[in-house]
Length: 279
Image 1 (cartoon, one colour):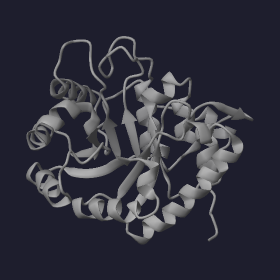
Image 2 (spheres, rainbow, N blue to C red):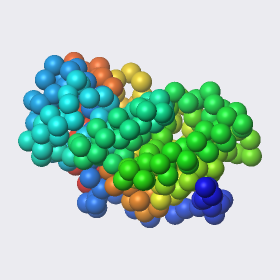
Image 3 (cartoon, rainbow, N blue to C red):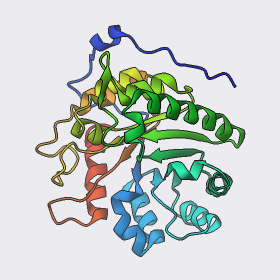
Image 4 (cartoon, rainbow, N blue to C red):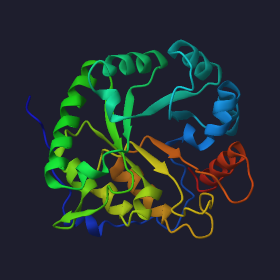
């Protein structure tokens, strides 16, 4: 199989103009979803009720972080009853290999999810040139296999993915320069900034492939989205996503808070902040 490569975005985009960075007033065409890890305590206790509450808040979709012991048929019904769609599922690399692939593929097809996103565990191979290229080659082959099943695969960014590899490129940059353009680049903004990465440049360098992006505050102390201490330039992030990123879903991820809010209430606050920003 011939592995196609995407032409890297050059330095001209580094000087990309942002004419609307000072305003959040424009309504976004990008829908708002939530990573279920954000409310995993509630989901573990009562997934059906949790999905219903997320729908009532206004979320349009969820990204799974596991199956919570549900069969595919039961999970599909719970999603349908809550008027939510599964936009993606976080999986391990092992879920794409051997006989496990068929099981995972069938489960996700039943629940109506096309997007299988590998969530971490690849920092060490990505940090060296040989491992990075091999992993990119493997993902490219798996992208073809997934497409044969009507599915897609992607990678979610974690700590270690933004280590410098030389020539001004990070491990994340190098991986997506080498992979088939069908592989989704699911950037986690908070993870990127906390790993000393540049999320703005990362979106530019994976232009057109950031269909899903995790909207998470860059502070590890429990600050809610847009709260004090969050170093993220959110107008710039949104502008990039809605111009060159081709983003379809903003995925809220809230990993606890210092205000004593329940995970559901924190999810509601994050959604309200997104609407306040015109998203």
